[in-house]
Image (cartoon, rainbow, N blue to C red):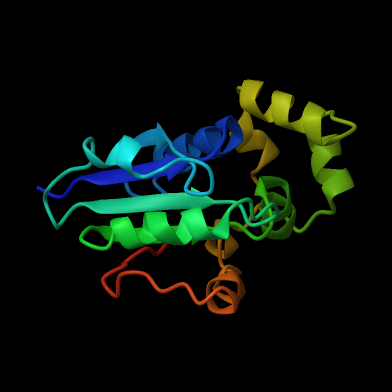
Length: 164
């Protein structure tokens, strides 16, 4: 049986992944916090499934490229696994603004937030994401990450079958 694991950087991404799984927009699977930009993969590697058929999805932000060498080293250490990078254009707020066809200000207003910090807090606590995101086109989510991959000469598994 194929195992699917999603790795995320922050609580907002975790909330979004759980929402997308519940709505059956993405495959069902386990979620775990792990940041490829900050954490060494050795901390995680012993927890990864040994089965090659397992799919590992890493949801990453590209607004703050903290340590590109650590990031690339982590990817190199994951080569024996079937991994997919889910690249957010800049960050979650920009991704949601894009798929919901709203400015950041309009998105923040939808959550009664005035700034990024307030939005983050209210997004995490929201019990009604469906109503707040009902006009969003989820077929567009995470569709703009190829520039980042090309610009940084990052190649991942040719077996990456991530599709919404």
